[in-house]
Each structure stands twice: as structure tokens, then as C-alpha cells.
Image 1 (cartoon, one colour):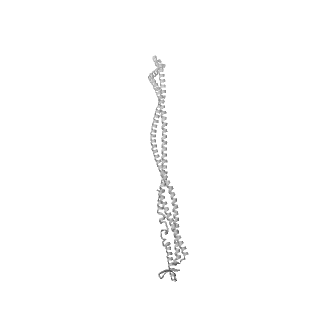
Image 2 (cartoon, one colour):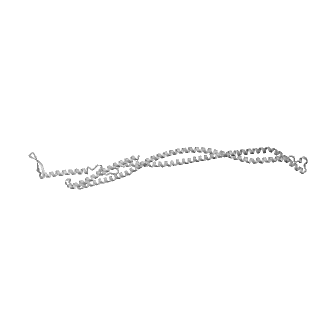
Image 3 (spheres, rainbow, N blue to C red):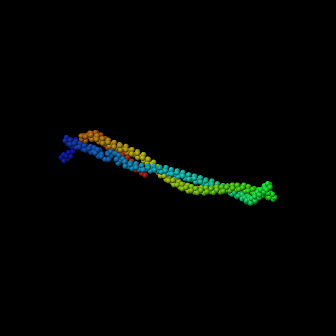
Length: 372
């Protein structure tokens, strides 16, 4: 071992003495111990940042606050989706009811029109029948009145002839029994009176016969008038009903149009919600995947922290009572390498946790935005 010394004002290499060798060795061991301590301190004492803290559910990287906000947004969105679907069903039901009401009113309107057409046919038929019934009535009336005029004109002659013949017959009976005689017992105008009586009876019989025909034709005619009046009254009532039914049908048709517009809008809105729901459900799957990755990363990171702490404690135990300069290089290299590896794993897993947490935050932001 050589040492640089100044001899006679000049520097030169001289063989070191035993004391110099011992002093130099002490200095080397001190520097080695300091270097190893500095390295150890850098690995252990300086490993106190957030990456070396165990991550729990209250840690920021867990994104519990954002997850809760997302859960609230998702719940509100699902409520809106359900309401949208229920609104479509309600509007479909309302449209169905409105359509049924309109169809029913339209059927009533068409039936009323058919009834009016049938009544118009009956009115025309009854009017045509009335013409014939009026002619029959007029003819029967004329015949009856004519016959009655004849029988009425013969009535006074009939009364006189009837009374006169009654007297003649009475006198003839008295004559036959001898109570009277002379001219009182002649037949006088009996035959003429009988002829007058016969004419009257014949005229009266004809009048009575025509009276029945007259009465029947009059009843048929008045019944026809009554029927025509009733049909016209029914037709008028049906016309009023048709106007009312038409107004109701128009109103129901407008309501039907409104219901159709409402259903179309509800379906359009629901289509938008259903489209969003598909996107939201995809985010749900993505979020579940990222959250699962974060949980795995956190578990791995916490395990790496435990492993690092165990390795640190193991080194402390191994080095306890020993001077760092006394540890053999191979042993020191092995110890420090394992500790470095454990620390590297902590740093790597922490970076993965931070990265995955950022990805989860990004997914939560996208999912929340998609639900609005």
C-alpha cells in the first residue's frame, strides 16, 4: 500500500506504515458505512410518501364520492327511463280508449245515417201510399155523400108513404072486421107508397154499404197521415241526432289526433331514453370492469406495502448490532436488492392504482354525462 508524502518539498509515493494502513482502513470503513446507511435511509426512511400508505375505502383513489354521485345520477336516470316507458304505455292506452270511443261514435253516426235513409224510404213510400189512400177516400166520400144525398132526399117521402100505408093497413083490418066501410076500405096509394118505401130502403142500404167503405177509407187515410207524421217526426229527430253525433265524432277525432301526437312525442322521447339507456348500460359494464381492476390493483398494492415493510423489518433484524461496514458485500447486495425490488413493486403498483383510479374517474364522468 502506497501513500503520497512530501519529502524535501517534493511529493512522492512512499510505502505506508502499519498505523497509516490502519487509519486508512478506518476511513474506508466509515465511508462505506455512511454510504450504506445513506442507501438504506433512502430505501427505508424516505419511503414515507402516500404511495407507502395502505389504501382503504376512504382513500381518494377509491373514488367513493364520485361513485356515490354516479349512483344517484344512475338512479335518477333509471327513474326517468321507467317513467318514459310508463308514459308510452299510458299514452297507448289513452289512444286506444280514444280510438274505441271514436269508432263507437262513428258507428252510431253511420247507424243513424242508415236509419235516416230507411226512414226517408218509408216516408216516400207512405207519401206515395197516401196519394192512393186519398184518392180512395175521395172516391168513397163522393159515393157515400151522393148516396146519402139520395137517401136523405127520399126520407121525407118515405116517412109520408110509410105513415100513409100504415093507416091504409089499419083501415083494411078494420074493414075486414066490419068496423068501417066505404072509401076508407080502399087500397088507395098503397102500392105507390110501397114503391117509395122500397126505393128509400134500397137507397138507405146503398148508403149504409158505402158508409162502411167511406169509414174504412177514412181510417186508412188518417192512419196514413198519422204514420207519415210519425215518420217525419222520427226523421227530424234522427237528423238532430246525426248532427249531434257528427259534432261528437269530430270532437273525438280531434281528441284522437291529440292523443296520437302525444303518443308520437312520448315514443320519440322514449326512443332517446332507450338509446341513452343502452349507452348507460355499456358504461355500467365498463365501470364494473374498471372498478374491479382498481380493487385488484389496490389489493396488490397493499400486499406490496406489507411485503416491503416485512423486508425492511427483516433487514433491521439482520443488521441489528452490526456495523454496516462489517457486512459482506455479497450479503449487503442481496439484502439491498430484495429491498429495492420490494420498493419498486410498491411504486409500480401505486402507479397502476393511480392510473386505474384516473380511468375510473374518467369512466364515471362519461357515464354521468351519458345519463343527462
